[in-house]
Image 1 (spheres, rainbow, N blue to C red):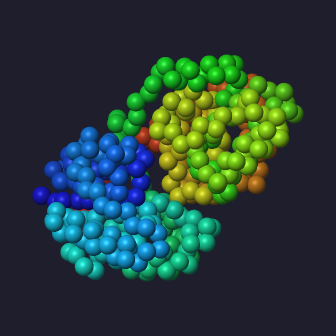
Image 2 (image 1 turned 180 degrees about the vertical axis):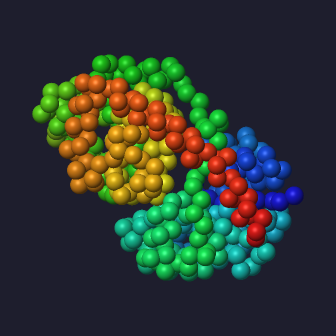
Image 3 (image 1 turned 90 degrees about the horizontal axis):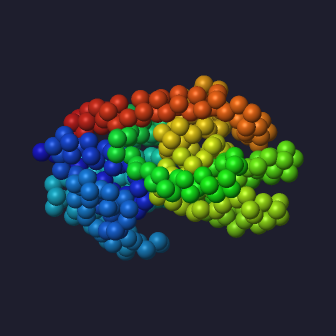
Length: 369
């Protein structure tokens, strides 16, 4: 029997990890989660699946002693549970996993969920990041574009990189709260409800959604609302700008939410002006909710599966505001084509990103190690 462990710093729901863990369990494997938190939403969901939770102490930033302690904790966890494969997610834990791999027989696979985020946010030159990608023996990236970037821009040898799409068990994905959906729909009843979801940071460009709203209301006289799902350093500026534009009654800042599906089912259009993606979860969730979307061409893996006016609206990044205004107006006049696009996106997401579609690649990789 193969023992597999996941190691990640997050506590919010990670349905791709949950789906893969569940599939491993179905295949007769023992699955563990190494985590800093025992009571997060993600940890509870994993526990319900039958994943065995192991908690370790989170290291203090900048402390070399704490780093060594965490590396030792991971090594001990893997040795004591006879872990064959450790799946590590996100940079803080990837660094620890790469350091630990020299002191245990466990095979380490690190997951790369970004393309050029490290360069954009200037942490690609940090010694931790450079050590991670210089010495990681096996890397799974979640988009073709990420693999290309790693080879060409970071000099990572191609043979160490595996591209495997994110996979989901859509039967388990979410439970809808119909009463909450109705409450959200009745908020500003009659208005077209726009929504944007993601971190409120510069490269996600949340301000563009507000610019779209301003023009639709003040220049076009439309009845429209905008909901922000997410948190980040730009929230204060966005609130101030909404007040400056006199849009306080039309903008809702909801912060980070676990019940994203309720909000998507209560909305009419998703605006996604982000320039920072690899394989965007938000668009997959919008597709599942049959919510029409606007995304940017050339970002993440959108060009691999998004088709303009077939399963969504794909625009040039520099023309996002103008194009979004046009399509929201057209949606008001005739929503039918946009809803048909959303159905097409739904069907594609369920095919392309099903755990059943990608699981054999994980199984083959594990069996080869």
